[in-house]
Image 1 (cartoon, one colour):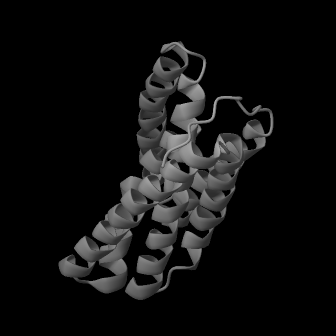
Image 2 (image 1 turned 135 degrees about the vertical axis):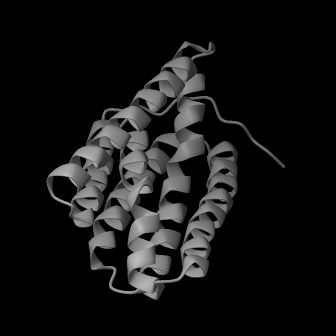
Image 3 (image 1 turned 60 degrees about the horizontal axis):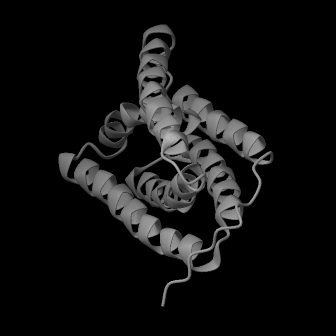
Length: 173
């Protein structure tokens, strides 16, 4: 839920901020595409590492911590290139924990953990979208959205300290 709240709260502001910093719809598309590509490649790479080495809890923690840092750093964006680099770093960071988190949720041997993750994920998108609307309405300060997102990822990292490694290891060739 925290993860999707974070992503939902900034997803509305990134294209607006990108357009403000670049004044180019082409660069807005490049920035959004670079984030998606970095995230997709990160999903594949770190999902494979999670399956191969069975280090799911460590990847969840690392992903939440790097995501927190990455989203906090978005307040430093001052032009299109810095925003592009920050969005690529966010894509990589958010791809680290995703596969490992789903594997941990499913590792109980039934789908109840996985159902909880997906259900609360949808609730997270709702909370994130509402919080971005509140931020826009009350302050019109985009940095608050990134600080809020980073804080939610940091809270997710703190909560992940209580996770225990599941013994199931999948070895892939």
